[in-house]
Amino acid sequence: MRPSMIFLATALLAAACSTTTGSDPDDSDNDGDQTGADDPPAPDDDVIDEAAGEDALKVINGEMPGVAVIVEFVEGLDVDETTEALADQYQLLITSRYHALGGAAFIAPDEPVADQLLVDVRVAGVFRDRAVSLSPGEAFDAEADADQAEAVSAGEFDDVVEADGAKPGDPVSLDKLRPQVRSTGWRLIHAERVPGDGSNTRVAVIDTGVDMNHPDLEGVVADSLGKDCQRRKNKTLMDLMGHGTHVSGIIAAQNNDFGMVGVAPGTRIVPVRVLNSEGSGSWSAILCGVDYVQRHASSIDVVNMSLGGTCAYPDGTPAACSGGEPLDKALRKLVSSGVTVVVAAGNDGQNADWTTPAFVDELITVSAYLDWNGSITSRDRYAHFSNWGEGVDIGAPGVRIWSTLPGKKYARWNGTSMATPFVAAAAAILVQTQHLGPAGVRDELLAAARTSYPGRGGDHPERLLLFQEQGSGCGDGVCLGDETDASCPADCGCAASSCGSPAPFGCFCDEDCAATGDCCADADICPIM
Image (tube, rainbow, N blue to C red; front, side, top):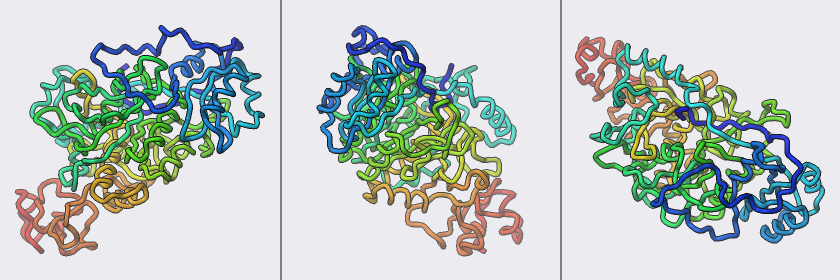
């Protein structure tokens, strides 16, 4: 299935078998990924680290015997010594060590052994590992197809670069995007106004890896940084599925004469591979990725996590998130270390407070806005699939967004996964230009965002990402999205702004230009009132 919808849904741990798992799995077995001879390996990590998310996933899926658990150690214990001691005493297979966070992930031989860990004096908590996987690719195409047809009929659709006969989410070749395009999302947030390009910043993309051989991403991956939390052997940063490459292109695709351009083409991407070639992984692998960023927090400015899952009771019933899970605590610690973390709200059409890590207050949670032509019109709205609620901080474009795919390809994909990197790129630019920490980045993003626009209200009270005109303000003769006649009479109605049809948001031609009668008719400059 085509992965045009890209948010992760969790599945509970399957019943465990009772055979011991003290030895390594078959060395020839892996997660099904295939790498080419020219695929560079992942950089060597600076710690003892198995980082074998593939093994944990096999256990969770019933393909290997055992019980997959995440163990939090008592504070102050040496991670390597404690990990080795527990593995030796209880015949555990180590799948990850969390050196910055203080814990490890194991495969226990059976349920009784997993239960024994709960009462070990070295253990502060034991959590069952769970699976994460990409949603079906066609899950939300019907909504997008119907809305796109209406937009085309209304003359509000101008993003028509597709291969002959291709479906909207299908990949197209590089030659189809010559000259370079700016996605509707890039135009909607007014990325042409950005005060910088993200130079001298790094954004960690915790995802499926990155195709660093893509012509639009060459040189974008940070040197000597990156981690593969999936494979026990033959580690790679290469994206063998596409999701991480699509996210990375929205952030940092290069400004050249082909393809598309990212919002912050000067930033450098740190690939952290936590999902395999099928878009599947485990919470223990994601925690491995967060632990890696924590250990390199002095070198990484922003994290993009276009993933997550619905919180649930042990029987699988959805539940409000508690905040006590290891990943939630690890992300809070990462933010306290000065790293801005941007996460997807989720695509379940539900309250984001039931989705992790979207519900975590310290993170910047992003919903998906639906727009077809790069400008605000009365038809624009939030996507029905986008999670909502007070826990969502900001909205960004998230429907049919152009970006890079492995193999020199491009495609338009949907999801809060696509909205999130717009905000992560904006965060990197704020770090570059204003040297802000997580709280400052959040404040600046919200201060500049649109506060009045179609679709806001009800389940979606959040503001919408926007880059303001540099050096402008009330009285500059430019009607911005959050300015009205009442708030800025010096600018409105639309002084020195083109008053075409539809008028720029905030400009009301029928009222402001009634005296001349020609503004809306011929898109002349609206006279200063």
